Amino acid sequence: MKFLIKISFILLVTMVISACSKEWLEEKQNIKLIVPTTLNDLDLLLNTDFLRLDGRGTSETACDDYEFTLDQFNSLYYGVDRDMISWKSMEIPKYGNKEYDEWDLAYSAIQISNIVLEGLTKIQRNENNKLQFDRIKGTALYHRAKQHLNLATTFCKYYEKGSASQDLGIPLKLTSDISEKIVRASLENTYSVIISDLKQAATLLPIAQSSQTFIAKGGAFGLLARTYLFTNNYTEALSASDSSYKYHSYIENYNNVDGSPSRPFLNLSTKEMHIIGIIRRESENFYVGRISTELFNMYDENDLRRTLYFKTNTDGKPSFRGSYQGGQLFTATATDEILLIKAECSARLNKTSDAKNALKLLLENRYKSGTFKSISTNDTKELLDIVIKERRKELLTRGLRWQDLKRMNIDVRYAKTLVRKIGNEIFTLPPNDPKYVFPIPQYIQSFTGIE
Image 1 (cartoon, rainbow, N blue to C red):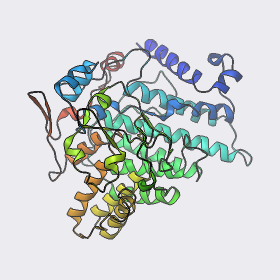
Image 2: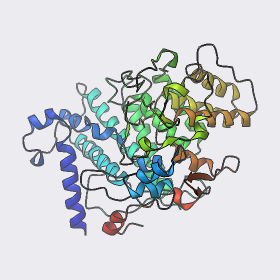
Image 3: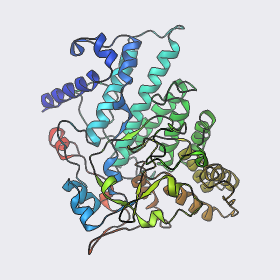
Image 4: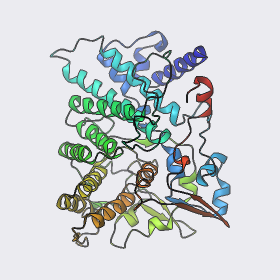
């Protein structure tokens, strides 16, 4: 069994590495016989679009932001999509050799990160190479943490401090050793490692991005803020969001965005993004389904997101067109998410003025000029309600809604039973249902015996 696992990892990593860069292929004619030994070699390993992929497509498929007619539902090519949309089964299948599911995708990226980190231990850091050395190390730590976080939010229960030390986390891959025993860490240890990697990355990365394909300090702190929010550590999430905004404060004014193209943000390349991030998915539900009526009705006429995010189809129903990645769904952190994390944590910590200021900064850039009305309430509950509503309106299609539902369900004020009507049939998913935790793929269980 270990032999089969070892062979599959060798083939997978060889394939991924060999696809990293045209320059790499030209320079290294026989990649399978070459071990990266220089900083430039390691840099090339990280310079691949593969590391920009996020495997959270299944959770996006299953969330409550979409609705379907019976004909649309039946037209979906994969039965697994219909199962997840109706919450009948959350099993993630293997889609064949040319596709990566959430599990394979994450651990392939983690393996690249570990190869880079181990390569750095064989290179002397000195005065001449320290900037490149630190950037490479910080980048590898960031991508390893990002993929561990994606796995934890998909395959684990929601983090609750009282039970996290006993709850099952994920297998933490911190070396490139493909023969080590695969076991699940606790959820507490899982998040502890993610946080440690991101803290270290934030100290190593440069202040400014060389391009939107590379991560910098603001992005590392941004993902750290997201991670702390997902562990209900509002004090640390607020601190990380402040650090992220300090280094990356650009906010797009939607009054300046041309809404006439079919994809308004396609050629904009908004500087709000901390890094390019794309959901890797097989599901057609994003194209076949429609944005739920409940969600669409949250946007009022002066909200520019109502027209920039959506198009009206021939059936009169809206579908999403507003991704920062054009036709692909954006999943990385960005300034808007950071402001919403700051607003939520400030509200939860009774810092009402800070919460309102963060919301104002975001929404003044989302509403038609002069139409945004300042938030007057000082009631923390009312303020939190506004933040949670705006979070859903702003961050849709980013693979975040499923985890938001999980974390809100532990609060009776926000717990929600999901309801989807397809034809004459009504499907429901109660709060805290076990199906909120996707099962580890069966082929992984069969190979490894993992719990």
